[in-house]
Length: 532
Image (tube, rainbow, N blue to C red; front, top):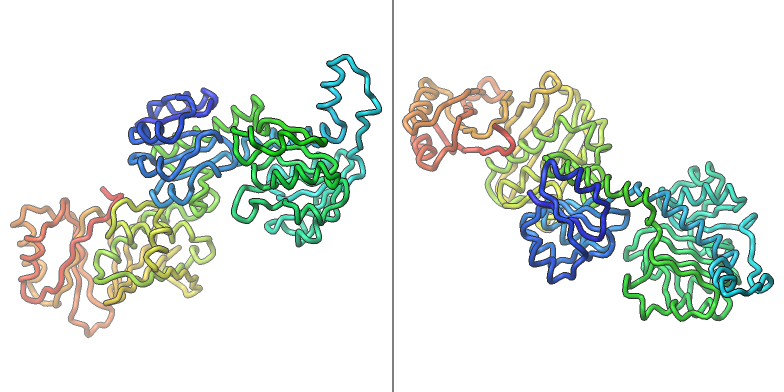
């Protein structure tokens, strides 16, 4: 396997990945060059300079994972990666301290006129009165986004004597008040409270242009703004106009709408009090080491067959969600495969019911496993990343329920798959905590060990049926590993089913021969992935 690393990432990443893959360190390159070489790589690791576009992703026939050595992933087309089944990971914690400290540094720099004062002094001037600043003490700091970085900024700001006011629709009032801040529910109520405002949100359709001439008009006269998050959250032209008019006293900006090409950025020629730095939020030795190690470890884990700890496009498989249900993942996937392979028609809906201990857990990872099993039985290239996307595109209804009805297993997962022709039910469970079993197929209560190659033979319950089926299988040079014969629950029922584990694939000739046995109807060959 091969891994491409670009954008001047710390070389420690190569040391971590090299035991499982060959690592190439190359400089940042334009789209057309990357398109030419990306097909040979299994993983790509970037910072913010490389733009991973749909065209690059389309050409990446072997790519399994894209790692962003940092927090933001707006330079990676997540939709294209997800549809291609490529995991995208980041390092949400690696540069937290660096970005928070740079935010505080910029606040102090603009409040005390550090940059122009330093330039003036180096010129041999002594203009103390010209650079009179303002104190942070007792000022209100408005924080938009109380994630890890925003939280640390709030903590340091409080130590400096500032009063935090927080807007974050995903944070609770209790958390904000516990840290000594004021929680504000709407931005309309937020703007007018703040002496300083700092943003710590990702760049999304909801946050682009969040601070513009209209929202600036709602702010205090002489407000001061900081952006160490992402370019485009503050409208650059509107900010320039507000600084030059005096509405905004000063600003400190570390990120820009068109990085690194900022020649035409309006802020470059702003005549007011503004501090500009070239995206230094994560530029500390410690942060660069941290994000490189974090993302490299995830790439190594994924290429070795494991899971990523910070996958941004498969949140259902984060370790904290996966750990409680990980033992059920394979039986969930196999149950989905089995249900689809014995069904006829086009899928309309999949109902997943959790019982026993599973009813008390978050089964979202199991839902993804079931979807992967169902869809991979009819489509190529389905994995945990793109299975939910494919299901949504195909209009498949996913219904997840929890049942408190008692069952005979620690945890039971039942899949009811409805097509335009029929409904099929398959249930999977763990026996003795770690032995996977298919415990129900439609009306049959079973105890079947999932195996790579399986034959399901519904038949009339009469003498010699097992011998006749076994003879056809043997005549086609297929070895039987084990067999389970089950009668329907109704004791008066004359229908039974053979579930036969065989050592190799079953061709149409064999199935045809079994079908010709009097009393046998509609035998099925099932091929389960992930089984020996």
